[in-house]
Image (cartoon, rainbow, N blue to C red; front, side):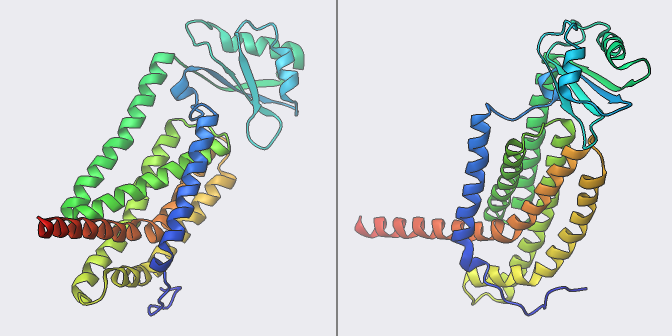
Length: 311
């Protein structure tokens, strides 16, 4: 099945400078947002603390919940609506279980005093110590780094170093833009989101490898053509497959994002942005970076020749 004619010849490579500038702007906006907010908004998995998810029989608001919990000695805490219906809320405290023995029971008692017996249900209670959160944050970071190193080795073995560098830079591009989207929308980063980042790495790499494989094949078939022309031809040949694969995947992720509920909303959001950006980078970033590499290497060779002649 093809949704695009196989003989189409869109000039993707001709727009590479505009696209690279556009991507750089997106990354800078995300990084600027992260700097302004003092880093990513880590969830309880990484920052430590206590979280309780509450469900009320009737709609209420965060201000009323805070008023009901004013006598709860838990230090600084926040209340925010969970999901679209105004009867589920999250209560977050910076203190942990060692300091908050019986925290959930005491919370339930105060809320039932305010709202009535049986009107409040504790859906979940999570407590993570600050050291555990720090360790999880470190392990999540290194999991992504190890994945990148493995990809660098594999693509270098499977293709060439220039392909590996292009693939890694495209993946870093995808992660940074997705991370920036989380910062701009003030979404939390927790363990499921790290899992989504790793899924993005794998999905984006798969798309990139398909294009790279066609480039390598066409380098032997059209060896007399300029390298940019070969790359552009290869992108056009794989365009239908890329859009079909990404389009069907996006339908599933969009359904999860809309109907999956609050628990997996951030996970689905990460996949939604990551797959969209990953498809974009496979076409507009990973392949044009090969040309940037060739231009850089070509300039260095010319400089060496000029130096040798002058000597």
